[in-house]
Length: 68
Image (cartoon, rainbow, N blue to C red; front, side):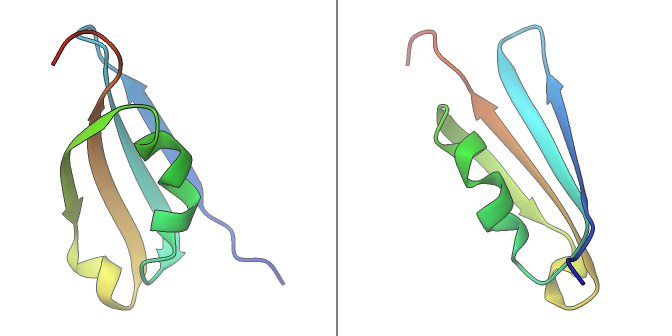
């Protein structure tokens, strides 16, 4: 059976996006969110303790478009 997970994406007023993957074990969430990282420059990545065995919650901030 396929693993179920949620991808929550928030677009902020400054054009940056934050996303969180919930319900996925290990670091497989990086494969799920790779397309988001390719939209712009990743400014921060944070793995929670859940990334090391239990379901993952990963939050990234990505600046899309606009300048530097």
